[in-house]
Length: 150
Image (cartoon, rainbow, N blue to C red; front, side, top):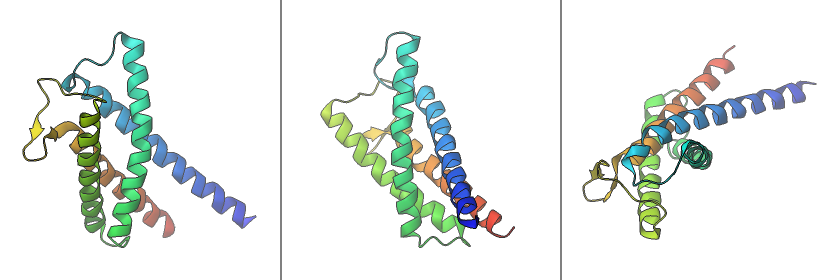
């Protein structure tokens, strides 16, 4: 009986992480769309492209948060170390993804996309994969620590 409850609670936490991650990324993806070269025609295509992008982002964010926590040693008592490690991993992953995608022609930037000097990649996607994972790691493990003390 206890095992089932524990598994269900773990499932709920993972589901909350996925929903929060998807929601944050969908808003971010739609908000930054004007920074890219035109890549959709019509409202339905706009929604479809960004729902797919946000779904893929969930997988990347899960990886980033997991690696960030592993690098920081999952120090639950020090959220700043965990957030900084997660942000650094997110930055690194984002730069690699952007460089590969740009080289492969998967997308291109519009004239309004600010570029990071030296890296030659857009600022908006780098911030997305740096800021959102850091926030998620804080929320995810802050909730875990708080619920463990109950």
